[in-house]
Length: 299
Image (cartoon, rainbow, N blue to C red; front, side):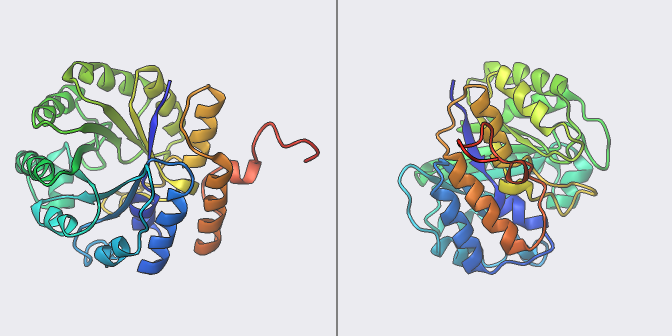
């Protein structure tokens, strides 16, 4: 069994952190991650820098990213303006995102869900015409910070319409970290007949992120988003804390016999680097606890 991991640390990880890294540091972060065996890295987002200052100078970051064999470099876009900016960079994948609830989508993107759905379809078409991959992430699929519980039937109805656009990948996001394995199984099972690869974007806000990743594994998920050292969150969702940590996820998958293609030691090195750059202890556990079994002679 294999699972594709998409590293979102340079985008979703940094966007909600108090530190403001320079474009040079952000590009270095991407380049270090690209050397770990990861096959997908989300480099940045093309959003209004006044609203998300940590993602300013996206084009400058992209210019500093070095080509890496076998690595897909992606960017997040929320609308067609964002895609136009991405299209002027070397990034080869557009990751479109919108919220499945009206209140959150209006606060996050200033659009109705219906408007965002139509725009997502247009971006998928444009990306394919440009020779790019396109994926769509449905934010707040497991719960909304403003409307509470989200009807899974609504999520699947939106997901089916997204699948009809010809998108390459559909990702269900637990944006505020409220989901549980039962919901993962339900959504992935309900979308299995759409005929496209399915993914999960998980946050560990309430300590269920790794259980949800395992449930996704059992349900046949194709891609798992994660952020090295567990950094990140959504600046427009109250109390949305970090993503599941990439190194912790890889450890779990490796111990389960799942092939990720990732060099865990190299990944831990990047985790240590970003911890040093940010200057404080980060949520990831493996960097502190260490690998198991340890190398012979190490206590």
